[in-house]
Length: 335
Image (cartoon, rainbow, N blue to C red; front, top):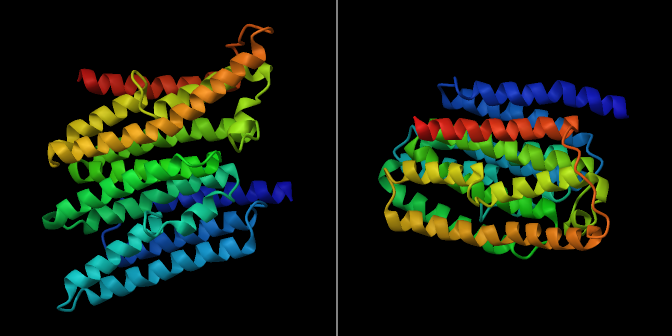
């Protein structure tokens, strides 16, 4: 079974990656739909080998995605009629539902909290790329104010909802919704900068999830009870949390700063201020994780201090990627 899982990931992850890249060269609605279906089939095949997910949840994911795919293909066919605006809105709603944004997000929460860490990473990052690129092609620029208000509302709602949970999978789920709202707003100003934001978020998420997977951390209690000989990994998790919460001088903060600079080209200052306020709310549930964990960790180990092994290969690889992203952002700012 383990060998089968290995071959499953070796075969279907490249299919996910290839389909995600193909969307950039797609020039028709039909080809976009085909790419989405290839991507969907690949991910569902990976869910089949996930021991954590029940068959009914997997079926609900399939039905939600299939239903929205049918709405999408129906919409681009019917846009040839006089009711183009109506079917464009239907297409927009189908993509929003595929991404898992409120109010079409309940399926997303249920699926995410039952996935293993690898599939959770894929669904919160890679699986968002194709719908985001399609969404960029159907944005109606004369109705941008409604899109701005919608993104501000879902960012605020997700920030408030994230305060109520200790389950790290659910916290990362609401975090992904908040980050997607920033990406969509940034995408209006610059698709290239949106991709930079996406890649940085992907690597931050990867660093966190690899550590959560390695030490079987699923909630705050597990994080607080990490053993002392894993201190270097514990600090790395804290650094990634600081980065997600956009606290200076972490590259998560620089990521938001550059985003605000580009968003200022199209958005009203007060709307940007509302997004910053929403980020401050979401910062609370990140810092809650950080400070509760640090306090408990300090109490557990204050009589048993040891030096950190900075030469752990696993830790060095993750630190290297983190420093590389930081230097890239600094170079951008200097240029």
